[in-house]
Length: 189
Image (cartoon, rainbow, N blue to C red):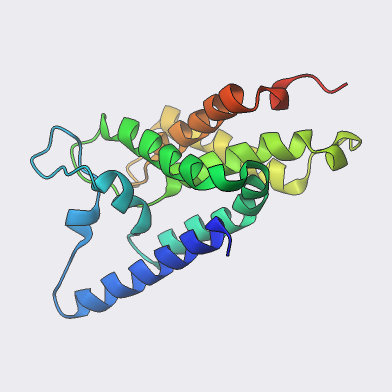
């Protein structure tokens, strides 16, 4: 079973369990969410646990949908390193995002944006796409989403979404690929 599949299953099961427990008045989101290091509520395990909980079904669906769409190609490229890439991108993006917020954050959006950004570079350098003049539709969608995140950061929103975490996830992917797979950035021959 692929890492992408395992991550999907963990997220769906965690969402189901937490929602079931909430029916009985048991809420664990506040202990699994990531709090800033300066908070009295911060615990190191939250650096990972927050990646596997989501606020609502829409939040879960869109993160897992984009992980499924983009993660398969990135996992094929990175192999066994995919899981560490995913987890470290989530820690990096959410950790930086926490520097600018007072409350807790949940979700895997930063890691998903890292996967999405990595997918752009990997697919553009794939042998089967070197001969194509145009971008794949999925890359156009990805690039549009990243540009939209920059727009939201510049304009500012009160939508309770971690737009900076999304950008930090994309930045992590670029740094990771530059360090570990510099050949992706070389000009096509």
